[in-house]
Image (spheres, rainbow, N blue to C red):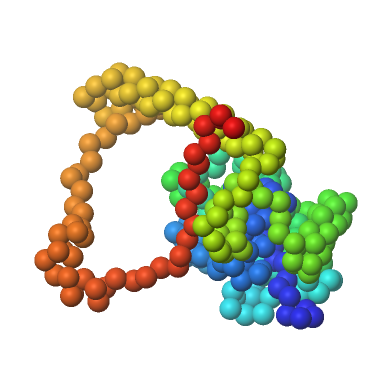
Length: 303
């Protein structure tokens, strides 16, 4: 890529399209511009551990050979346009054909998952498979998934649909030109990545106040109303939870409804006492983090 611009991989497509429940366009934009770094969750680590076993199970059931795709540290496969890339989990070969294999692990199969043999997978995974086929020019991408809680395996078959592929490519290409090449931030959303990025983009330079405009007052009034609704809903939630606790009584729970279990006493580190008793030792283990900006909402509706 010219000027060392980052490329877009299949794992970012769900976020860019607004389909991912875990990340938003801001996650992709912030990483691309060096505002945040990639992080690995427990679920991601679990997936890496289970991936070879699920792949081997798939190969055994289907009597095919599989070959691992590029590792995360290795160069990815570049697509028909230089800003596109993919790292398929596996390449599959049989006696008469070849295709891609994507591996997923989940806690359970909910309503977003269909039956084995269909193409009914969560939309963010479907978009990932569409992107991989566009990059590698393959016509099929199977998705093998394992649910850890129910110990259940399902396999899905996703075939290339160039009309869908074209629409996704057009959208992501426009997004890439605007937000990666030109550098414009995405529209502000409620994601953590957006909040963190705004704090880095707009570091505080003074302690002066700006005079409120009509736009400021309109946003503040909306936020005040939303906070009121959230407080009311939170109160209703706690009341309903307590009503269920009352119904459970001394039992473990209500089958298929809720549990109310007894936890073991928690141990915690008394930091203040340790620092008071061992001030010099405590200083050696204090790590200074990055400065942050704290948002406090004090609009009363009177302006």
